[in-house]
Image (cartoon, rainbow, N blue to C red; front, side, top):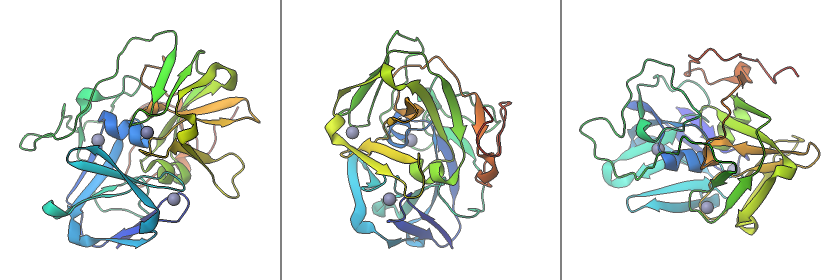
Length: 282
Ligand SMILES: [Zn+2]
Ligand SMILES: [Zn+2]
Ligand SMILES: [Zn+2]
């Protein structure tokens, strides 16, 4: 039995049995919904899955004709997908507590990969789905050129923002809070000066969640689709932008991995970026 919960602890779930597959998905919907470079999923027979509480706090967003994506209404963490007609459970691996017993097998939807993320492992890469599976996911690549203004939006498009300055820093964060908040193996965040940031539309549709006991950690997301959105730390004068929410290339690339001391045991870092057990030394 392996368990997981959302960031706020309201929604929990568990899986009993062996998983069948593990894939990194780079599709634009996953990137936007989770705010990350990619999302790692494990799949298994639906009968092994059960909720451990909090189902009433899940909101479902119909992201395509065949698919709906859920998130916790309080903290925005992303939920497993259950395809009952196929007896299939698809679970985000990032928040799993413990070892799921298998390792990533492939990258899918690499054709719409974020330009700021480079794959450095030797796993097979598929432009969409592996041969034999039909793609019901609509995905789009991101432009590689960098305009003067950086823009981003949520999955449904109701919320959008613009940034008129160069980023200060960009990190991949492996802490358990980020893994739960993003339901991914690590967050990738870009940090901008607060004065360069503005909402273009939909600001009133945001939900903000401040993690109790953590002075700076929280989430901001679209209340309709759950897409992860920027959050400002007014004390710091910095806005933290989930890189997956960007519609344009930020021009910077991740500078380091931080909090690798709490990295998921099944994920191997294969790039050459510096690694810090906790926060990067200033
Ligand atoms: Zn929650
Ligand atoms: Zn995907
Ligand atoms: Zn939205």
